[in-house]
Length: 231
Image 1 (cartoon, helix red, strand yellow):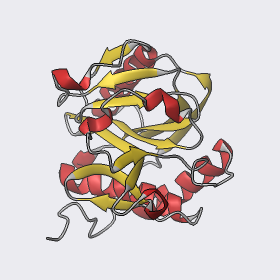
Image 2 (cartoon, rainbow, N blue to C red):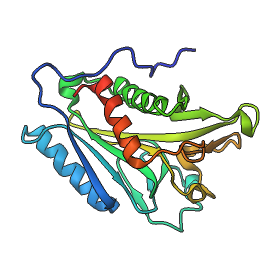
Image 3 (spheres, helix red, strand yellow):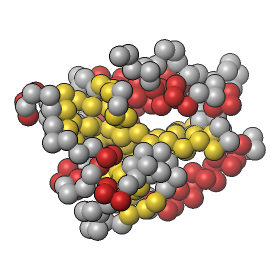
Image 4 (cartoon, one colour):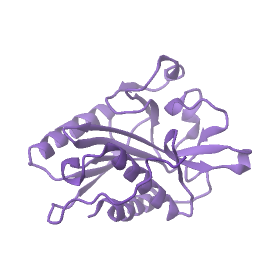
């Protein structure tokens, strides 16, 4: 069955629309501070007082629970702070070595199609990974981007990037997280994204043998973003 999230066409803003602003934070940004900044920026975009924004950052080790989180997702989360958030999806880990990109785009001007937007985020990650010769793939029943791992066994796949979005007055919040070189042991004992099957795990560029810096990944993210969402 074809994946309904496959991106059929890019999602650029109309001609003459202000360019997307990019911001990169050094150090680790506390999660409550990031939420407050996103909310403020979205309000400004709604009112026409700010441009769209892609914000690149890292968080200290923490877990976030989305609107789909269930009680059986939560065991094992006691070692790091846990934050409830209004994004879609279930339990997710964030931490050092993981590139988080919070994306605040105006879907009023790009087309009010949330499924197409999520497909655009997946395509953005897939094109970014391709620059490092990593074949990222989407799965119809599992949001995010996956890498086949035949070295771990038949049918084994690892998740390398997560997606969680929220839309407020057709302005997007939250976004993606791409594992560059995090401590993968921080996923031990949790049910990340609600995936319980043993053949599905987590990976990173470093785990796959890719020696990429965060700056390398940021540059690839920027190039790939422009091909889908425009400058």
